[in-house]
Image (cartoon, rainbow, N blue to C red; front, side, top):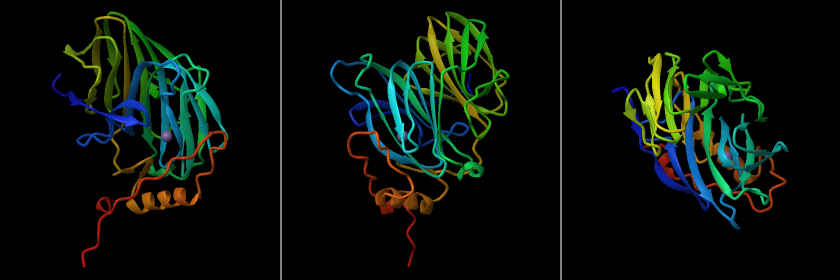
Length: 296
Ligand code: MN
């Protein structure tokens, strides 16, 4: 399948947690409205706290937390407190402003593996109210050799009840050994990430550390699992708008980003994550090189 582009990803850290960042990538900033994809684990631990992300702000996006192992405790400035576990969705909508923390709870299983994604809100939804949803009963669809959980958006005419703001798909495929054809929306571009097992896409072996990009126009693919496998699929209509992404903000202009940063520094707009014990994250400096300078 020559249409397939490899997004190699890179190793980085989120506090003490080693992560693999697959989106954004310089040659591929977005897949549909999906603009961020971090993968972490699998890891085992005894007396440590592998995830401990202190309160930090977001604008212009929704965060999607999806686990294969372990648990993550979410707390936000709206007052929501929610433990997410494998098979459940934590979906947070920033609207114009929200702050949250994410951490390994004290009472934990000693394991952690998962992904975090961001969905860029379309311009029409940038001013919507911030919100949080925890969904445990996501719809499932049978595949020839497996099952698909529709996490967000719609696939195979089955729709998740997660509140999203543009046509998209986010789905987990659990495959048994064998072949599973999968119909795709030709209007969507797609990304595929193998989370477990050995999988071939239209005969081509996929590597688990990489994200695979499929441009719009594909009406079906064939996935072949050599052993029990888990694949996460994202997709949507290509984003027509140019995003400006900096730190935890998704905007349309540097002015918007600078204003959000200033409000966080001053303690305005985002509110407090009262339940988190410890200081919040400081915004990094907004370096002049990223903003266009006037020529005089
Ligand atoms: Mn966050």
